[in-house]
Amino acid sequence: GLEYIAITDHTKSLAMTGGADEKKLLKQIVEIDKIQKKFPELKILKGAEVNILKDGSLDIKDEVLTKLDVVGIAIHSHFNLPREEQTERIVKAMRNKNADILFHPTGRLIQKRGPYDVDVEEIIKIAKKTGTILEIDADPHRLDLKDEYIRKAIESGVKLAIDTDAHSKNSFHYLEFGIAQARRGWAKKGDIINTRSWQETLKLLK
Image (cartoon, rainbow, N blue to C red; front, side, top):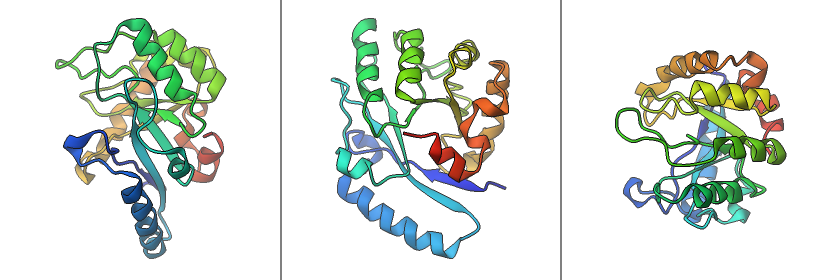
């Protein structure tokens, strides 16, 4: 029942997932163009979940990121950095001209791992300045952002995206959990970029 989806595989520095490097991403762009012709009724957006390195740089070159429709950025390592360093790391990544959405912004895994120590209010403030979208990750193990931060983001005028974080087709139904989480944070349709058509959604990205 979706009008569009985004393919956002992990990138190269997340070795355990066989993450995509620049060459693989460019190849995937070509493959998506081929598949798009077979399924004209479903828009397939080209993207990546790009790893934020310890120093706040991204693990994919900008010249490749510019070719994608949507660039998600995320932390998958160095969870125990001091609060100020972790915040600055994320802020630097958000300031990248190609970074569209900050995925699972606090990194929590419910009952497995707490959020990393980060100044979320500062992240929200920078998101407003940079036009970075914050994700509501609908995976029931994450539900990140949490409701309290969703409300703060909305009050600051920061837009959000609800994302299933689906690693297979079996997880597409997670969307309903993300919608519920957004409602807990008092989000309305206008606060969520992907309630719009894919053309309108892309206009709200960097």
